[in-house]
Every structure is written in C-alpha cells, then in structure tokens.
Image 1 (cartoon, rainbow, N blue to C red):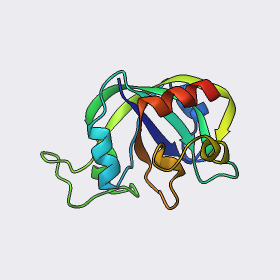
Image 2: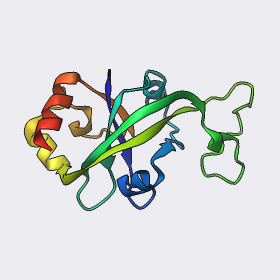
Image 3: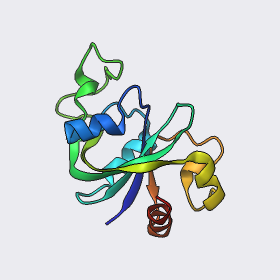
Image 4: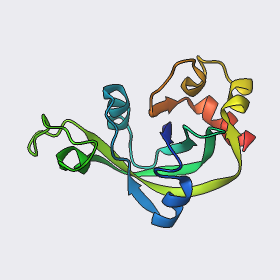
Length: 149
C-alpha cells in the first residue's frame, strides 16, 4: 500500500462533501506531475485529505483509492473550466482516481504543525513553494501523521 496527500479547497470540495458522497472522482487536476502521481496509485492506497487555500490549511481526514485509470470527464466538457481542447475521447490526456471516505480527523493537522514534525525532504507539502495538489507520502511520514491525529 502507498500513501498520498491530495489537496482540495474546502469551499470547492471538502472532507464533509466526500463523507456525504461516500465516493468521488478526483477531477480537474491539470498538472502533469500530479497526474503522473495519480497514475501510480492503486486501489487500497490511503490518501491524506488536505484543505488548502483556507485560513488554516492542513490535513483534515483520510480517504482510500478505490478505482484508478479513469478518464477525467471534465476534460471533455466544453462548459468546464477544466476543458482541454487537445484531449480526445480515444486518447485522454487526463486520468483520475475514485476515492472513498474513510474518516474525518477530530482535529485538523495544520500546515504549521506539519512543519514542526517534518522537513521538506520528509513531506513534500511542507516544502516552500510547493503547489502540487497530489503528492506521495512516504510510509514513515504516513505513520507519523497517523500518530499525530
């Protein structure tokens, strides 16, 4: 099993939204490195759900990857802000995964708290200037995060 961190703005899609939906595709990713990380995911991988672009950003819960290799439907939707004119139905450029809700943490693990426990080499989200919305988390870092919660 691998571990990942996926960011979402809570006013766009929050951990509470995922809890209510039970499962959701992680659509709208338009960064090649983040897309490539999603291509490496496998069913059963755990995801740290991170609220970004908010007063106190941080990890708010857990999700699990349940399906991989899904063509992101938003790339074909001309009304979507994520529409990609270069994407073809028979050769989609953007793939995504389906995740399921696992749990919401009782207390948010803030970015500041993460910075106090991890170096930039240990956990990418604490690296200055890191704007990736999807990133791997090492097993050792994942175990430390799970203990902190």
